[in-house]
Length: 542
Ligand code: G6P
Ligand code: ZN
Image (cartoon, rainbow, N blue to C red; front, side):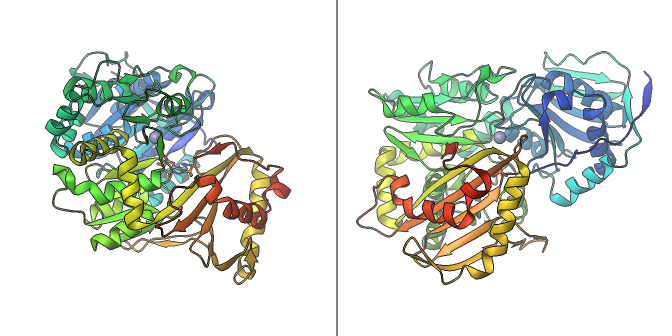
């Protein structure tokens, strides 16, 4: 078989964001676009003699891109690639395979929760040998490489048959096609009390799992229906489709509206959950009650010891800065460390590797633990099920008891999408410039106790990340945070994170939007959102 060296030129804009390189699918399918980026990955991490994991969330172009990446891995001298059958792997399952097989990392094809299809989004990211997303120093090096690339290597060969599990080879490189679900399901069986959950389902417990026509479907059917005995039909939208059936596979109250309607309707099941395009995000809902991701993290941290995998307690809890402080209160009560990191799962990697944190979570519907190095949607669902099975209470009862004990951090995120980038930048620039003068001002009856632009020093490796989001803190413990999303592909998305603490015992069951109303008005006013962007109301509320 011949290795071809193809001359190419740098393509502008191949800079990985919060979670890999994401672009519109036609951009990724453009001349040399995928090839340049993949070669830059191999040039930085080295491919000679190495073993990688490969898989993706099944979106449009996933199958074609997999064949290109396999041919380039072979041409670059890789020894072996472990690839999910049909080029499918959820992100947490890929992370697990990287760790389980002690490989040199993996390439995941996904644009996560962004819609898929010929005119939607595609993405590629590299995960390290620890199973976690490449840190900034590595993605920066990849980006730099894309700006100086002159050639890439690819073997001339037929497509590898990825439809059947088993070992084949490609130009001397071993290709192991594996069942995407089996190893992951075994991992879950080791962490959770499947017997207790099975008994709960056998006792009539009803659940709805909405995989949003994305990658979690096969995992959910195998684990929930086949292994745990949930009723057939518990899992809906469970067949991954190249365009996710036209759905926007982002599990939040706006995009998973069908699930919300069902959970708030007559004859709602006991428990509902949804997951995103690549299976790392989750939303959980009880009958008639939505669980905010920040509260979910806090409840999981407080109850994790009820699951066998965490029976010995947690080493620490980590959350991203815009996530509410609810988990900090749990950590304090448990006498364990809590950490506040910038947005992006990659920042948890060092804490997990160093054994400082066991459970991590983000307001952006991500929760996970040290079992892999990605957030894990189905893991969160199973931990909730394990807790429900042991406590034998409803979601509403568990939340009420939690708030009565710890107080409630009312929380919401307002997103303003597809803002012209220059307008969003101007707004953030003006806000940053105004920060030094904010302390001491009284807005909406609340005194501003401090305002800054969040910077993080990694306690493990000492690396510093600056400008991670503007925070305005009020004397009564309320706060808002503003930052621009790092995962969008069109214009800028402004994220406004809103939080207000109620100690209880009264005032614990208000509507969050009402409880947060003064904080919302303060944020809109201080940031001059309408003036800069013309927007007066958010597109998405979580
Ligand atoms: C991805 C990352 C998360 C991050 C989220 C939101 O899902 O894996 O770690 O919290 O994106 O990022 P964004 O920059 O869009 O707010
Ligand atoms: Zn995702």
